[in-house]
Image (cartoon, rainbow, N blue to C red; front, side, top):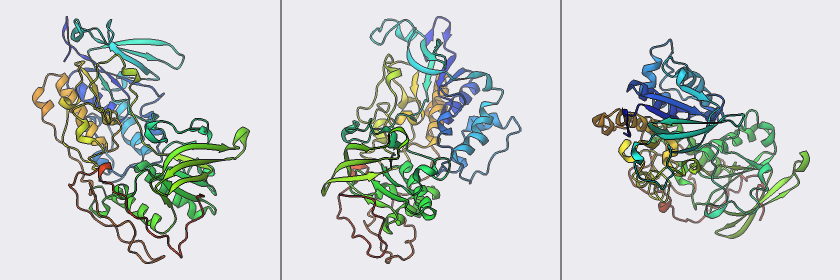
Length: 477
């Protein structure tokens, strides 16, 4: 806890009014601390609103923070069915908006305030003398461009990673022509069956990526293809196999997540989705699309079989996210060199070794940085690792709030109540055992406990194409 001339600090700036940011504020209030929540959007959970049509695969019981619940129970709030799966929109309407409206939080949230920098008041990153006794200075801008500074004794960055998409090119850099092809590119979770239906109906879509965002989008496109003739889907991944995303089937502690993977595998097996493995994108070549024209984009790549090109109407970039560290340039950070998570947390979640959604319990001690009183929490704390669950973020901020209040024992008593992933690694065959055009195989369960992430992916021979369930001709060589 940073000290000042007036004793222990009391004001804590929380960056981001999403689920974890609001949970942090609830825990801070319970601890007698004074949160100031800064939200870049014009309303709370503005990032969640951009994927409001997506249904979470974790039920309500894992998506409601304990301190937030205690605040809500002081109102006329009606708890949702804890076993039901909320959409992003329901998460906002039934939980986050009521929480933000509670007497304890409503006056402590400032929307339309984008944080552009965090530093120590009067000191840049290089200066050390008396550093720990200086308050933090958080600089913000509003919609009109006005700049204002807020001083605080501690800062919790729960701003998330939405909007910080990983590029689609190999080696972490944009591919040649990727920026020029922007009009053909879609974000990771487009509303395929709703407001963006016309963009995908009767068209060829290339989905790039192998996370749950890609899976949700692929399933939506497959549903669209059932009613919209000419709709075709190609799925490109860098890995040799998609087993990691197919997941644990009925062994998954989150049934919706297991069903998602099982359904996706059956769609690939029966040719509804054309899977192109080991697809390393090298460039984009737009054709047309100017001034309202339709146009297409050709995506060039290197595969295990040599160069390959896929022509598509739209490319969905479901390539994951990375944290925005620019606004933290003047904070002394200690980050894992691979995943850009806090250094002590990085090895616990490194996707080279872990494909599990569950992680060892961790809290304030694992989230500290060389500038005392500064923390990154929530999905941003995972850096580039893709295995975050909301319940993990809630426990992070509970522990941080306890530490800031001086309750070391509570801060260290970290417990995570998370569902099993059902799979860390798998020996799932590359092809289905179901008969040609027969019913999809029943969801399969796989042993969990082995720690194999990217490093556990081994190239295998491609399964032969089905002869009577031919997929649409969605890719060209």
